[in-house]
Length: 86
Image 1 (cartoon, rainbow, N blue to C red):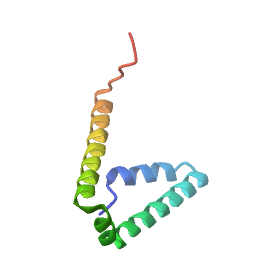
Image 2 (cartoon, rainbow, N blue to C red):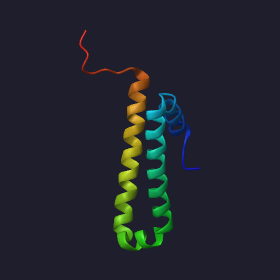
Image 3 (cartoon, helix red, strand yellow):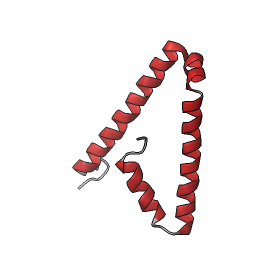
Image 4 (cartoon, rainbow, N blue to C red):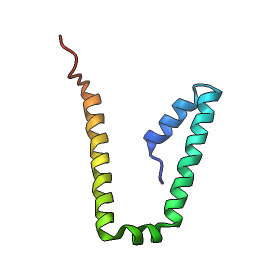
């Protein structure tokens, strides 16, 4: 439920690059799984530490990050290159 199709496709692409890329992908996956586990396990303490204002800030930052990724994907889909002069 946490990994979307983009994450799976990226992992498969890196894993196809040889043993070194596969090891780096597995190590990265392990670190991310550990961080996710810690966030889930200690979520009550994290929410208490951040408070309502901190949670609002985190929510808005996550929204900004998702919007930035969406705009980047849209521009990549349009094949937009502002630095290229013809």
